[in-house]
Image (cartoon, rainbow, N blue to C red; front, side, top):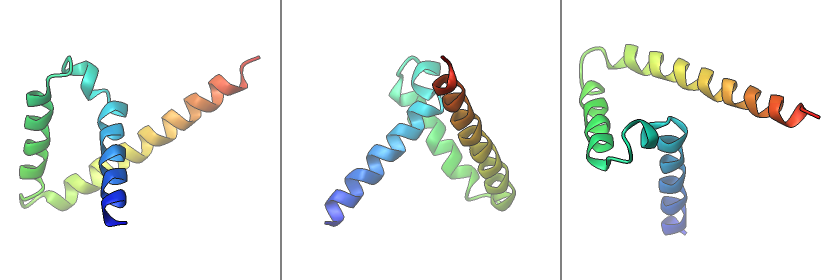
Length: 78
């Protein structure tokens, strides 16, 4: 059961990488994507981690909302 949960988590996280546009933006350069994620992790160990989390959470929520609205707009077209 834990293995399935872990697999699902990894698939969902990969989906976030794709939704964020990182695959296209880096031309699928996994070293660049990994380097960016390492940089994020380092920033989260800094003194301003709480501010970064708040900022990134707001941006993420806004992006999810915008994507949902775009999807609804497309579905509403005749």
